[in-house]
Amino acid sequence: MLAQQLHQCIKEYENYISKSFELFQSTYGITIPPLIAFHQSLIPRKGIIPSEDSEITFWFHGVGCEVCFGDIIVDFDYISKDFVYKGFDIWKLHRFILSNKDKYIDLRDKAVFLETLNLLEKEKIISPSDPSNVHAYDYELLLK
Image 1: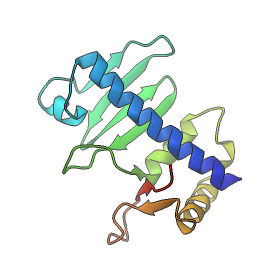
Image 2 (image 1 turned 90 degrees about the vertical axis):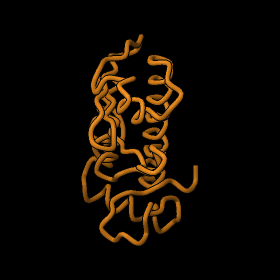
Image 3 (image 1 turned 180 degrees about the vertical axis):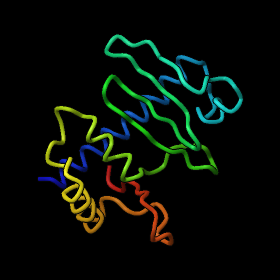
Image 4 (image 1 turned 120 degrees about the horizontal axis):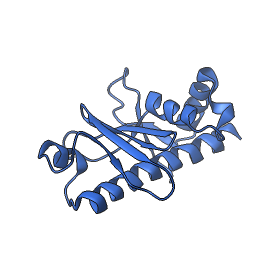
């Protein structure tokens, strides 16, 4: 059950990332990756995007961006070669879980979260983004 819950959580997290890309494109009229647009001064470092549902705030940092959909925090990094999102950092995913007040309650405990993450890896639902880097905490979802 926890494995299914975490799998669903990863898909929701990645849907929020896709939604943020769409918001950047529609709000700022860009066709290039948002991080490149930020470095070309087409998008401000931080800002607010109007929304009917909740206030959406964002700020670019290093090679990533944090987008807050109300209380829900979606922090992610871009792959530097193509400046696109590919795979998640487990600590940023856990922060997403903690920011979801009404969801994923059983996954808030760090030990349970890590144990469930290992189970998804054993079941080949996720995989390290760079298997050669044993210290990396970046994973990608293999089964959508």
